[in-house]
Each structure stands twice: as structure tokens, then as C-alpha cells.
Image (cartoon, rainbow, N blue to C red; front, side):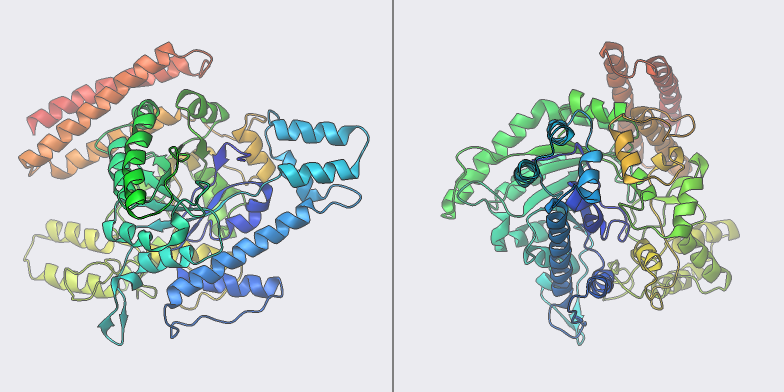
Length: 597
């Protein structure tokens, strides 16, 4: 039984690395990144020491060390959270602090909370309470995330290993071999080879009861992508249990911009076509499972539609649940300010509380070549700038998780590495460009930052662990929403805010989440047009026109929506409609600009 209508998505590499240990026993779902097995191993050692558990290091000389590190860490997290949950339920003469917190963070509308309050308000019957707790309490899911394209090839003594030893494949195997019963969230696009590899693991298939021990969740930005990927899995005999829709640009971390499709219309399409999505994939999976001589579910398996990206008020949260029939809403960025839930070092926490709109920006720092939400003045960028000043641009690349570029070398290297940037600058010097052109190209090369290290360092600093290899630079990737949250919060404060039971968490004049996303998309299109106005191809011009047209359709959708809806956004409706009018005018002017290019 799902207790909460929100979940904590994956954030960076280290910010939710041990979030389940902090919140799973309290019934909250959260997600661990599986990018950095070195970081996972360091945390496993730390937690084994903290809880006086035996620890044997998994060194990189051990065969399949990456998968084994991931399995060991996940098993440890599972065991620790189950132990905490058991302790929470083990009441003797009075309710523990943890048990009180379990119910305290539930919304007042929760039937479970109301029953518990009724049970404990009158005569305190300990046996009755024990039975109630045993029958009704459940843990939050310990989910994991794999960025499917971060699937670096690996070598042993200069010999390339088979594809199942690639980074994402090994991470998948590490999760599949763990004792978790939860979900794997696949993000960053389709990787057919990785998806096909999932066929090898029993836990991803439904059993006789139609239950799946390890469920597949796809993070998607539009309906078409969900349908294509859902069918691909169905053809392998695998069921997608959840489609997790994320705003293309109004989110933290990597930003996968759509072609101007906005969150509201996308959610409406999922709501209106959910049954079609389920029936089409069920028809395919039934035939495939029968052919494989496996159990065929008598009816379609449960399928959730969830959403995340830029949600910041209880009103927005409830609107997504009610209007779009969303099963759960992801609250990412605000949770970076909740030390009870996430792992952020004090210096970074301080930077986040002070961040204003102008400090949060969509950058080109990611070595993956995907726009990346960042904050000005983060210490990893300061480290990067210091190296550029020394005329030694680029990272030493200690972890090589994003060493994927083969443009200049036979083996993949990272575009943020010293090796790559040295070779690119050497190539650049031979081009005989003007000073302005050279500076522009130099800036593009050296802009890349070592995020695969920087996004995990915060956890090492927080726990005073060794950073000799990584350095102390931190990359942090909040969404634009961070500008409106300026205080460190307790778990009770954030949950009360999510459920509309407290006020005063948000600071400043915060726009509606849909309006904010629209503004970011318009700015994104403006910047793209500016970049290419001197030399533009017919293909680019067509792309800009389609993008602008989709945004215009999105504005029309919102105009219609906000004029029709009742009992939602009453206090801000006139402002929203006014903002939409202004956006419409801006888009009309952009149309003219694009035609003139």
C-alpha cells in the first residue's frame, strides 16, 4: 500500500545515495543512483563500521567488481532499512519517536493516520496497537536509477571485455542480483542492447500471481517515446510498471528538452491514452510470454503514471493528482534542503539556500553534451576555472564513468578530461581562426566539467570520507525551483508543505509551475535562435518553426485549461492568464524572427 502521494527522485550521484536508509522505514519511496560503484563501496565501508557489521573490500582486481559492489551496497541498504523498520514497529510500553514520526509526516487526510490516532487517543491497548501496526505499516520502496547511455566499455589488460561488463550492464546486473524488491528507473533515452539484457534475469518477469519482484520504470518526456519503449520491452516479455514523466527543462540535473511540448499537454495525453498504452503492450507481452512458456498474466499488470519537475506547492501537487490522475508526484529540488532525507555537505547547503533565479542556469558543462541545470559558483566549476587559468584545462578524470567519446582516440575518453581538451585545443590551434572565433571554440571545449566526480563528492564531504582521488569540488544540479526555497527544512516541514498543512516555506514571487516551464522553453528557443542566426540551414529553420508552433499549441491548451477549471489556482488564475498572454505575444514576435532568418 502506497502511503504518500509523493516520491523522492534520484538527485545527482551522491545526493540520494543513502536516502532510503534515512526515509524508507518511514514509508517514503526514494531512488539511489548506480553510476558510481567507487562511492557506493566507500559508503558501504562507512555504514559497516557505523553499525559494527563485517566488511570485506571489493577491490577492482576482483572479477565483475562493479556489479558485486552494487549488489553488496544495495543488500546492505535493504538490511539496514528493514532493521530500522522492525525497530520502529517494536513497541513495548509506549510509541517510539520513529513510530510517531511515521504517522506525523502522513497527511491529516490519511485514513491510516486517522485510525492510528483514534486507537491511541483513548484507552491505550498495547496489543491492539501492535496488531494494527503489523497489519498496516509498510516501508518506502528502495528504487535505483541507471542512466542508460552511460554504458562505457571496459577493458582488462588492454583487452575489451564483453558488453555485459559495460558500466550500465554491470549496474543492471548488480541490481538484479540484489535481494531488493523494488523498481529500476531507466533514464536518458533508449539503449536497446541494455533493455534486451534484462531478459536474462528472472526477477523482472511476472510470477504466477502476476507479481514482479523488480519492476521496470521508464523516465520519459513524451507519450510517443513511452509507447515505443513500452512495446520494445513487451516484445522481450517484460512489463513496464511505471512511466515517470519529467518536465523537459523545469527539472534538476540533465535537461532533455522536448521539441517545444509542454508538461500539461503531455500529461493530458498520458491520461487520455493510458488504457490504450496498457492494452497495446499487454497484447504483445501475452503472446511473447506464451511463446516463452512463461506465466501469462490473466489481465494487464498494474501500470502507474507519475510526474516530476518544478512542482513547488500543495496546490500544484494536488492538481496533478486530481486533474491528470497521476499516481505519485516527484519532489526533487526542495528535498536538497532536507538533511533528514538527502546528503548534502554544509557549504553546498548554504549555497542552495541563498540561490536566486539569476544564480540557477541551464549550462553546457555536462560531458554527455546534454543541457545541465547548475548553480553559479559551485566549487567544481571554481576548480575547473583555476585549471584553465594555469593553462592546464580539463580534469585528470579519476573515475572515467563518462569516458564515452571516441572522436580522437580508439578507447572512449571524457570530453571534460585533460586528455580530450588538450587534443581538441591542439586541433583548434591548427585551424587559423580569428581571435574571436578561437576564443568562442576554446570556451566550448573547456566549458565541460567533471560532473561524474563532482556530483558524488558532497556525500564524501558530508561524512568526512577521503577525497584524495576526487578532490573537494562539488557539482550540484538543482532545478530552477530552488530559487523559491531558501531555508533548511525538517522532514515534517517539507511533508506538511507538500500536503498543504503549513505555509511560509516558499519565498519570493514564485510563478506557477506550468508558467515557469513555458518561460524556460521560450528562453531556450531564443538562445538557440541567437546561436544560429548567422548561418542557418533549412533543417534548423524547420526545427525552430516546429518548436515555436508546439509552444503556441501549449499556450492555447493552458489558456483553455485555466479558463475552465474551478476550485484550483483561484488566487493566481488572473496572473496565470496574463502571463500566458505575454508568452503568446513573445512567441508571435519569435515567429517573425524565425521567418526572417
